Image 1: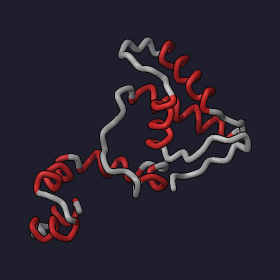
Image 2: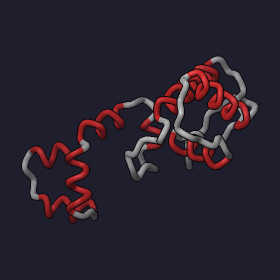
Image 3: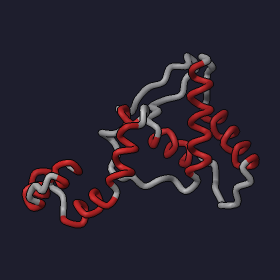
Amino acid sequence: MCNRLERGENRNALMKEYRIGSSTLYDIRKQKNELLKFCSAPESSRIITERRVLRKPRLNQLEVALYEWFMFKRSEGAPISGPMLIEKAKELYAEMELTEECAFSDGWLAGFKNRHGIRKLDMSGSLGTLQ
């Protein structure tokens, strides 16, 4: 859509085709670089069809570090559970000396898994995608 806008295609036609409003079209154009960066990330291919917003989590730096740790452990074949992820998040939070309040609850864990396309955590060490 960004490329089509740059080529000068009719905005009204694009809004009708994608069933979006003018403000959404404006936001897409404004966030072009962030959208392209997100779409080119390796993990985005699993979750791009499920994603509706590009908003980053409140503790983005923590989430990036936690996801990298998660992927590293999975590459080693280590089983990862929800409580293990929460404990590691708390450790990273302390190490990074973050001050923004965060409750590492089951709801937070569900959001983390959803944002990163993790369907389930099981003892086999397999990584699933969102259905």
